[in-house]
Length: 463
Image 1 (tube, rainbow, N blue to C red):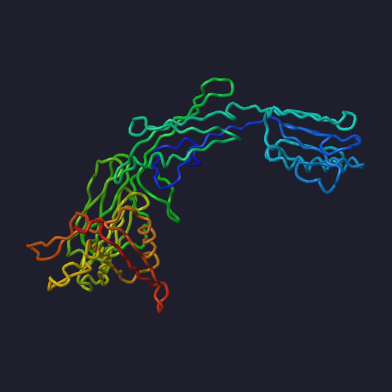
Image 2: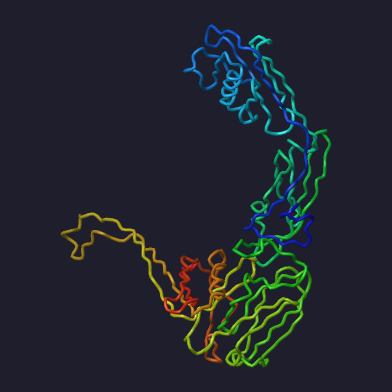
């Protein structure tokens, strides 16, 4: 089984989510049992005179009840008491208590193995047989794979990369292949993988246990997100399809598809009138990163933008009024499914300069001869700028998408360029990568269910 699915087809997995291949086999058999029966109490004249040895662990007798501790037992006149003392000493043997459940029934100590199967049990004593008798019944297991080494060969893009190995104890054996596949997961593409499982069974024969195949891409787990997807129908790779907003006139979205798909968008006026629309057929397979521009006139008059890939749809609310903010900053990130998510920050932004200076002390030798004498001087000056962006007022659904941004490892700003014809700043598809250093989503003190988000970040490169 793979991710608790029998023979999954067209599965897409994410490197930041556990991906478990499980081998199951129902084993059956019997448990090993050792019984030590006290029939009568022999007379003891010295400590250590009598001993009982089970699987290399030895317990010995003592004469005084005060010394009856650890791996020592006392021979009482009452045979049930003697059995209880023996069981207590055996339970103080670390190996035995890990292998057996040890208890008494009347005058008999019962040691029952915790698991089925042969243990090659040995037990002996120098106590006369008529006083203490020992019986041993070893266990047996009927299994093809119990205790055998399971091999998992992993290939990526048609080439062998590694083998994972585990021994199978109990009825199952599991492998998490995420870490082995993670180096091959690339943003914006599906990387095919193939796993084969085999073992040498208890009779010495090679057994083919099955195979698993699928595709991997970078992604992570969020509350409510799917741990994997099926690439059977076109779908928008959006972590959330509720509370989406847009301020700029560029749409950025990723689509997962098994072959080709029809992509379309439409801008609707408040009364439902279609102000602008477009439809095109895309022939690419896997993950397709989409960029498209919407006319400014449509954005000014429209209220929502509907997009669709096949039958999968999402709606973006246009933040109004567009002229309420002098400018905005778009933050884009690879979300939990490896696709594009973005948010347009229209609130006031700010900058904070952080300085880390390394100083040293110059000698005093030119104190009298240098009219501009310096003693403490600067060796290095590392200055980094931290930026702060603030959002417009948000609903609960709009605020929820920041959970995804907080987990993202690939985040960037969309660069803007001055358009000489329109004499406006226009968005481009160029990126400026950032490192998120803080993200706060706060509910308004006066109005419930109204939120604002504050994002702090530094540039990946200050150049």
